[in-house]
Amino acid sequence: MKKRRPIQPLQQGVFMALLLLCAARAQDPAPPGGSQSTPAHWKANSWWPTSGVPSRAEFAGAETCAGCHAGIAAAQRKTPMFNAASRPSDSDLLRHHTGLPFSEAEYSYVLSRQPTESKFVVKNDTGTVSAPIDWAFGSGEVAQTYVLKRNNDFLESRLSYYTSLMALGITTGHSAVAPQNLEDALGDPIDSETTPRCFGCHTTGSTTSAIFDPDHATLGLTCEACHGPGAKHVAAMNNDEPGPVEKTIFSTRDLSPVDSVDFCGACHRTPVDVAAFMPANMGIANLRFQPYRLERSLCWGQKGDARITCVACHNPHKPLVRDPATYDATCLKCHASTGSPPTSTLLVGCTVGKVNCVSCHMPKYEIPAVHAMFTDHDIRIVRPGSGFLP
Ligand code: HEC
Ligand code: HEC
Ligand code: HEC
Ligand code: HEC
Ligand code: HEC
Ligand code: HEC
Ligand code: HEC
Image 1 (cartoon, rainbow, N blue to C red):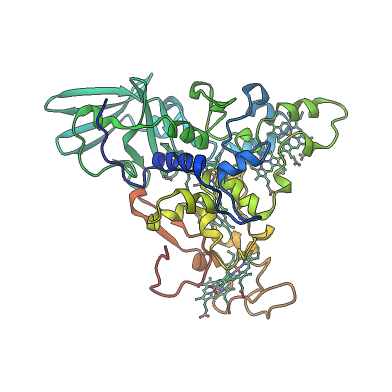
Image 2 (cartoon, rainbow, N blue to C red):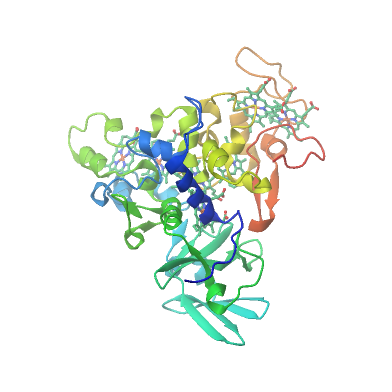
């Protein structure tokens, strides 16, 4: 057995190991009607993202969906979610870098690209190891981490590419202490319960009929990662008398505001996933769990409102919108315009700013371990110097 280095709480894999372990035992602490854990949703619904229950035969494949939903398909291909995982040969990021160097203690690394493969080469006084990369995780919008299959183990690479640094750095959650030997320098083993979860959130159809088979997954998130298997829908739509469409594919239309947010939370983590299964003292790292942050805000209220779900601000089929003014319309569905008094349908408005509401009320903070800024979804008045509220 290989000796494992201590793993920091931030490590993505460990989150999911915890989630699974707890799911097996814990009572769901959520009140009725409130947010639930993702495992509870797997049980309660015919389909839920990251569920590995449906069989491969029930999936139609994204090309089939594009045949009728061409506009949505063309837009969705440009999203980071579509590119959430890839083979190294398909990763634009790796294609644009022929050799990325890094060094720590006595180790020198190169992430090198050849025509047929990408690999990590690590050297020290005792020798050299070279290991091909099997999968690239993350679109590279923020970062990209590599997964290697080595001697029947899945390894999470010790080094990731960080877009803001334009260079390799230590993967979020890995020990800052230099590895003990060349083999450990490649990465940390991901345990067998966590590996399917990583693929579950970053690929489509990696687990079917409860069997994990990453070689037959569609890398990245295509239509059926969210909408569930669609072969039945395709067959019905090809039929002359299709009947009600909602009965042929899981309907995201009918979700309550809480469930709609939990739906995105299957991967972005629901508030209950965060409260029950994540380490309690994550500090600023919990910025990444938007459902948890959003539901803390006064705007959310007790049970939410269709005007303040994730899809009220984000079109899941399109890339993230960076222009802050675009979000004003969402705020003004509930708040009166600046300068106008509240009405029977509109709440009190702002006395300070007229436009770009999110630029003041949804501040961005850096998560140092990820070398990137994230947006606080806890919408609130930010007083000067108040900083991040864990
Ligand atoms: C033969 C044409 C056809 C194909 C192929 C097809 N769809 Fe549809 N789909 C339709 C039509 C028609 C509707 C109803 C009109 C609409 O909402 O666009 C629809 C509606 C939908 C809806 C909305 C359901 C609701 O609750 O209102 C979703 C989601 C959907 N399709 C997803 C998919 C996915 C995922 C695939 C691929 C697995 C797919 N479709 C393949 C024709 C098709
Ligand atoms: C099956 C898992 C999954 C589901 C379900 C999911 N996401 Fe994501 N989402 C991801 C992953 C993985 C990424 C990171 C993509 C990358 O590699 O950059 C992401 C990234 C994003 C981004 C950031 C894009 C950027 O430009 O940085 C937004 C916005 C987003 N998701 C919104 C949503 C919304 C809204 C929903 C619900 C409708 C949703 N997601 C549901 C897995 C998921
Ligand atoms: C429960 C779902 C889930 C699991 C499990 C998961 N991820 Fe992710 N991952 C996400 C989501 C969602 C994002 C987007 C975060 C954001 O932008 O807020 C993401 C983002 C990333 C990114 C982009 C950089 C970053 O940190 O935001 C990388 C790289 C990544 N994941 C790698 C991995 C690897 C490697 C594993 C397994 C060892 C893994 N993920 C497991 C959901 C998941
Ligand atoms: C990240 C998750 C996610 C992915 C990936 C995704 N969808 Fe959707 N889709 C949703 C959600 C959530 C809604 C409901 C949006 C709402 O209520 O405003 C939706 C709505 C729809 C609808 C009905 C409403 C509309 O916008 O016309 C269709 C049709 C649809 N999706 C097709 C597709 C197809 C085709 C793909 C693949 C090219 C796809 N979706 C990929 C989450 C997703
Ligand atoms: C679904 C309706 C809804 C939407 C959409 C909404 N809010 Fe709110 N917001 C509320 C409610 C309800 C409150 C609490 C008001 C109260 O208790 O008087 C609130 C309170 C606030 C507060 C005061 C919080 C505090 O700490 O006192 C601010 C600031 C705010 N909203 C800004 C925004 C901004 C900016 C947006 C858009 C990004 C937005 N809201 C979108 C419903 C909404
Ligand atoms: C009131 C509007 C609003 C709502 C509701 C909302 N978002 Fe966002 N979201 C934003 C804004 C604004 C940004 C930052 C855009 C930019 O980069 O300037 C953002 C950014 C993101 C990002 C990119 C990473 C980051 O932190 O900057 C992800 C992922 C994301 N949102 C997911 C979600 C999910 C999941 C939900 C549901 C829990 C959600 N959002 C609800 C407005 C919203
Ligand atoms: C330049 C930064 C800035 C911008 C832009 C801005 N706000 Fe504010 N907003 C503030 C500050 C600061 C306060 C607190 C004012 C006070 O009470 O001292 C505030 C207060 C509020 C409140 C609470 C009002 C109350 O009396 O309880 C709401 C609601 C609100 N803003 C909504 C919005 C909306 C909606 C927009 C966009 C139309 C917006 N804000 C744009 C800075 C801003």
